[in-house]
Length: 341
Image (cartoon, rainbow, N blue to C red):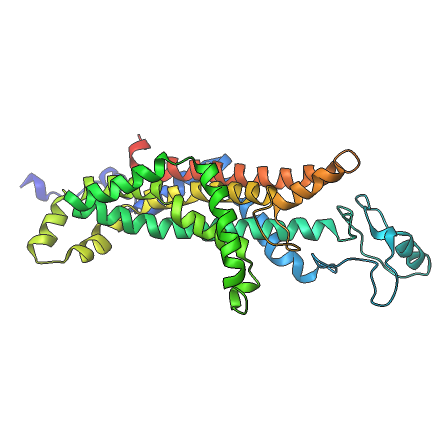
């Protein structure tokens, strides 16, 4: 009968102070918000992304606009190679007449194009390539890793041997060779298609990622599914007559979601860095569209006179890659159950 005695006031206060119910995602977000480095990196990524999207909408100069060139008139060379916040002689005359001239924050390049908007467009291209390349890697890695881990047996052996072969190839050499060959092949194939404006170099870059960079994701997903497929809920689903594809979609992949998110966040900076050094070697985006790597490559010609043209894209690349890596580390610390003591 003592179990049915009404609770005292102190016991009621204890029940009220108990931790409210929560979920794995809420716990992870709470731990992530306490990580100051990861939070700052996240806001840096958001700021750079929003700037790359919205700044070109109101910036008065275009990324391929050669200032001082008018059809039927000789080009005005005073717009070429301006230093940061410097005006050309033509602009100075307009300012003396009372007209407002928008400044060149980073100066202009050797062809009279505003360097700031080219850096912004280069950042947009690099972020877009990193994001879409990571999506391609994610999709292929999940499909191959899920099939290999759940099917097992001969299927697992064949797929993992393919992964081992790709792992044995020298990454940088294969990327350069494939990008060179695919660019020549795609130049003729894209003529007259909607993809012609995107350029053969970007398409070849996505193909390179689809061919080479999915193996790490596939191995990771395979390892997770090998451990999860032995759980009781998978056995219960199999006993109920569920198909393997349904079990993978409804049970196994959702339980790998934290690992998938973390790996994708760490894959994006790798894709950006790959695009940057390919553009630096001349295998990236097609001119006149800029990329951070191509901007750094073009800056080598006037390195002694205009070193800031190399420093600015290098700082932007470093900031993006560092922020994404730190944010990915924060995601891993927050959402990986093995790291939560």
